[in-house]
Length: 277
Image (cartoon, rainbow, N blue to C red; front, side, top):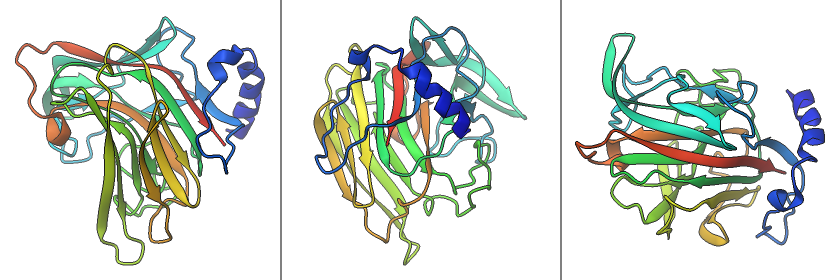
């Protein structure tokens, strides 16, 4: 896998300089080396050297959080054209191993693990009530059903693996985004969580950069140049080991809420994904 990214550095040099510039918010840390990226400058399915479709429902034929969809690896639900990745949620009846849902969507795992660095995702969010888009990471030792890495990095489960929600948006407030952290305390094993929110009134019709800067002392999340939340990375938290990136739209559920009867489809559009160290 590392050889693949060494070759990618040569390719990334062809990308225009203005597209590769980013703001460095933390003056004590410099994130200069691009270690993973997808610019989506190709047509068709997401690059299977970089992305894994997580499609097996882990909760007795459903997904957690009372979500209403099945995730698929169909090109109808995730595809690239005109330089962007589209994750498309659709109203359609779909069955998987005897479990039938009324909606489909896509959930992409990066096939790349990183510890510390800066993540940038430039994206436009779906506008329909009931849609729940997310840019987030999970500890690679989670061993969640159907994820790309399985148990090769451990199997502590959630929340001991740690989860970083760089960006989520509820289904009922499309003028704000959320950054949130979920983890299991490494000393007591108790569930902990905290986070913040940002006002983003044009998130559906304009691109914004949703970013995270993560090191051994803190994890900061941003929308464009605005700090959303700063979590102190203390030793009781599981944020000192490898994580992988996840992109998805859920339908309904805890943060999606009610979906209008008129819903037919909506799209989460991603211009690029970049990870620097």
